[in-house]
Length: 137
Image: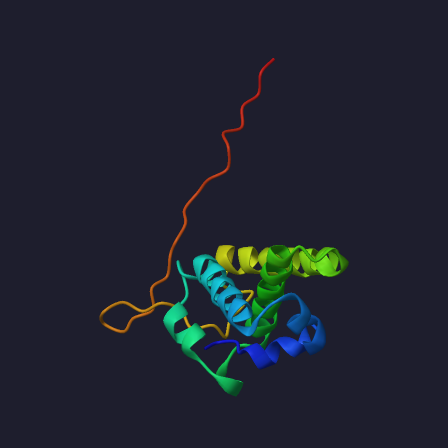
């Protein structure tokens, strides 16, 4: 698993976590958080490689954002008002970062990009132009 139950102690005290949710509930919310992060990163990045990593091979920033998203889900489900505002803030920060990464891969250069069948990196190109500029008198 990309994030374990024991690692959640860096975003919430263990005694608080055991008061508001069971380990099974927390693990389910961790899986949901990983799935949400996958939905943002999937178009450009090799999410199988990213989220199958364990220990020090994981991207530390993704781990922290995943824990923030997971704890937001846990607190949302348990209706615990005393932590909700802080969890909401961390969740919003995580989603904002994931959105930036999804739009521009220069933000997370150490995440593995998707590869095609030949092992070549898939790069999604976007083409656009400025709106037409006209003068009217």
